[in-house]
Length: 264
Ligand code: ADP
Ligand code: MG
Image (cartoon, rainbow, N blue to C red; front, side, top):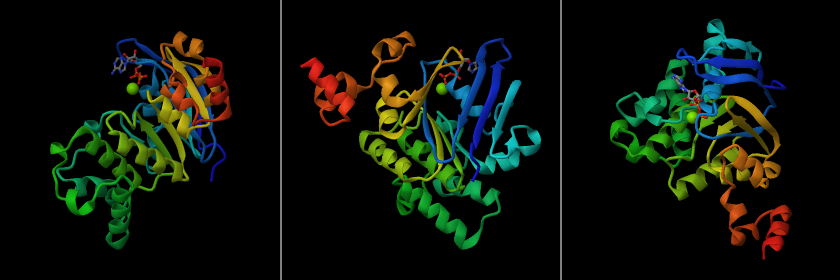
């Protein structure tokens, strides 16, 4: 296992129309660390994540995944190592049926027979997609939340070392969201999760990185930034629900309980 499976140095990126999406990003993530990436719309989260498996190549600076620098020669190794779940599942699902979609990645890596079967069943079960019921259904006809779960299953079936998730809870109903949080908690993988769901970030990640206009403006403990409404507001973010609703705060950590006492 690599000490820092994700290492980003001085990464800058401008889109062809000149939009500067990332500006001198430096970020290292340790093995099995779970990190939340938050920031307002357009702050650069998706652009940053798309660099991690070489969908976007670095223009300036360097991205290293495990022992590989992100460049066209290393793409195959990098994509076997990093599982990326896109913000919009319509960009991810492209096979006609659910079964074909989930098996596509491992098949492409040369996985066959019993192992393919086991990996696919395991990945579908992990995201609460019943293989019997969903296997032959057409991916086109599913709801947003179902598509998202199948996109996640397709990535899990590839057995990645690093899981990169772009807005994973956005289309999920509350029960699927809760199950998904529990799943991520049990996966012994390095995880980087871009999210507007700050309660999910609090539940899952000890560390949070805040992006604002393509720059990292905070990298530290999640509790600390979530309990700073002025800072969040300054970067167009809202406090998590559990900090703004007194009845939730009772169930949480001492920091929140003490804030609750201040409020009542
Ligand atoms: P986020 O995921 O945080 O909402 P993005 O990474 O999608 O942010 O976008 C960062 C910036 O880059 C925004 O200003 C956005 O408008 C711009 N952007 C994103 N995709 C493109 C594109 N294909 N062409 C031009 N600008 C883009
Ligand atoms: Mg985005």
